[in-house]
Amino acid sequence: MMKTTTSKLAVLGIALVVVLVILPLIFSGKLYYMGVLTTAMALSIAAAGVWLTFYIGRINIGQGAFALIGGYACAILIMKAEMSFWIAMPLAGVFSAIIGVLIGYPILRLRGVYFAMITLSLTETARLSAQSLSSLTGGAKGIINIPLPGALEIFGFTLIPDFSTIDSHLAFYYLAAVLLIATYAAMYRLVNSRIGWLFRSLQQNEDLASSIGVNIAMLRVIAFAISSFLAGIGGAFFVAVQQSVYPNTFQVQDSVYFMLYCFLGGLGYVFGPIVGTFVLFLSFEGLQGLNEYQPLVYSVLMIALMLWLPNGLLSLGEGRRDKAARSAASAKDANVADSDAKAKG
Amino acid sequence: MTEQVIVNGIYSGVQYALIALGLTLIFALMNVLNFAHGQMYVLGAFVTYYVYGVLGLPFWLALVATALTLGIVGVLFEKFLFRPVLRRSSREESSMLLAAGTALLLESLILIVFGEKHRGVPSVVSGVIKIGDAYLPMGRLLVIVLSAILIGGFILFMQYTKPGRALRALAQDREAAQLQGVDVGTYSMIGFAMGAMLAGMAGAMLVAISGVNSGLGTWISIKAFIMVMIGGAGVVSGAIVGGLILGMIESIGYQMLPGGETYLFIFIGLIIFLAIRPHGLMGKPWG
Image (cartoon, rainbow over all chains, first blue to last red; front, side, top):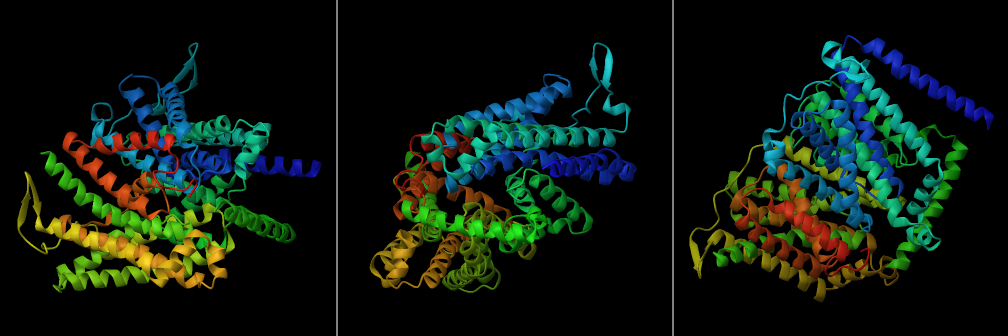
């Protein structure tokens, strides 16, 4: 037990050093790669939300909608209300979360394909809304020329300098890294807390959980609000990096990609979404010149993944015996699920 | 004015019903949500564009070619992708991601093969008829008639033929159907192919009216999902009712709101509706 804790800490330490020191040193001059890493981190934050909704047993294809809402909220707060980025970004997250609660409360009663269908339509609705509410969102032209984040000062003491006075690529990289670490630390804590156990009970059997006194409606909305918040933060950050937002900034394809990132990493692992996002995003950037075939490569990968590696990349790391036990267990699960389905039908 | 709205509503509604029918068939048989449905529709439209528009062969031949192509695509999808995945895992997430993958695959292949230009073909029949105050071009009338024939034929096939009965048995209870000697594998394949064909036929008919482009698929899939949510997933009558309702609402919305707000309102209405009836008008609880 002690040993696993130490080895976990060691892995964490190495990861932190790599992310905060080594990667910036390697790529500091190469703006393109810094941008790619920063984007991958922002996407991992939103993907964490999708993972959490998977964790309570819902298939969420609406993350693009909430990322778009967050992105627009941030842009509008900066451009129209002339707020500082440092206030606008958290507010954008909160705004997304509020929308998530309002929409989530009725639709989280739906299960399976119904929930998937409605969240998918949500992504398209968000895009249409952004296009048609043109007095607020600028319509199809979007909102452009969003200023870089200004200085963050508390009592005259400059906590974070104005991004336009420093290397903004590096600054965004570090901001993304800090947000990413905070997000996943919180996720890890959440999943290993009492509420994490309750979430797992939702995934396994909502009716049973409800019958022993778990407030399932409340828990579902909490999970969905967290998911929407993370999408809002990710979207707001992405918009700040791009300095612009359009109705097409996040679309159905992005919502599907978020799902793919979670699957590729493995739905059973908190850090699955990071692994999935980075592996996919970075390996893709490595294949220069394939950009126009991105959807083709992603789709083939998705299909191959479902055919040959349904438990994700992180499941490869588990020992052989462990794996055998797991597959036996999942076979049993499948049988149980089958007979469940029969009982329902 | 009102008559025109009703005629437009029926025209879209009948087509939509055809699309929703295929989606609901695949869902009922295999518990798979066919994300690629819209892309199958676009593929059908492009096949017709090539056979009828580019090669100049007769329209009916183009329809046959479309049905064959989509049937083959359906068989391949079922046999090589969905069957192995469904055999190993009955978790909904697996088939869902696979379905999303097939949609993306089909969309990117269509884009690579057919390009991103908007394509149209010369109209099949010409002339306009007048019903009350409403005008109905003959081309649209042809679409309404053909769709109605296909839907009617589908219902008759399901109700009164032996394969139709096997498919219904399969939708009701897979295991019991198997015990009664229904060849589950073959009929799943037939069902998937039929669903794909229905989507393709809808696309083939549309290309003669408003043309097609490779980016249309996702939007068609979303419309199909909305119809299925209104009517209830996995129920034939639900798909038809859902299609007609969406067509009518859309027609009224476009008349009253010329901007893009129609679908915003449809969506808000849908959320409220689903809060009251989570399984649609005719669906069984949780499919």
